[in-house]
Length: 328
Image (cartoon, rainbow, N blue to C red):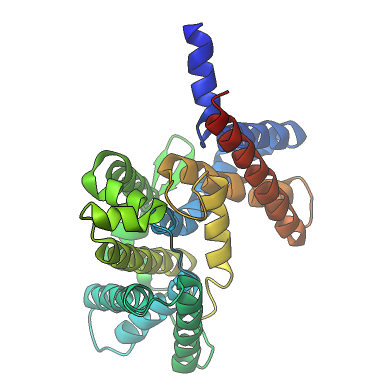
């Protein structure tokens, strides 16, 4: 009876569905093409996973608080452009340019947060407007052309963020370490700290949270800043890895990141979030993108699979929620 109870509790967790789906993906893609689990292919999956993953981790906390940020994709493209423009012009060292990009990103996140909390404008509209402003600025500054970054590999900052090393036959980027660290820290904050309780209360029932002394506005502002900063970090990592700071980079990433978070079990309406689920959601979509190409499905069909996964996981989460509420 106790074992059955443990199994029922495991199935009821929001991470259960994404975990099963990820295992099924791995089994299917490996069965069709055994090269899917080769060291080179796994290394490639991990390299691409980190960049969107960093944004998704921050978005998990923001969505748990009842808000979301559509400007993260534009910041992914804008921040590296700003950093490399400052560096290539000789205005600053790369380290200072990186710090300037982070500060500017934090200010953008602050503006988003103030508009949402003080002016009471929905985050959809605020961050959609910021997306256009930031993307337009990047295109205007560069005339639409990528910035030169191909000598970045010799710089200390590049080695710290994207240096490579090998574990057996696996090539691993340092960025994977930063992703893992962010997942551990943010997971701990969300589930084990008073700040995590504030985040969940802010999204679940803001009025009750305020009545119990939670500063809902400040909590949300901090999360908007976190999203912007991690989007900047992800963009800088990508620019170093690909040797290109393109003002169009990150187009559409905001929707893919939200999909990762929702697939992982975080409630779109706020109040419930899971970093573990988001990590699973990140791998589900990145494995899907890699796997369908590897088995010969045209990459243009990727959005079909994303849509099907979102619909399927939303149906599963809804069913599990109903069962939990009914006590079965």
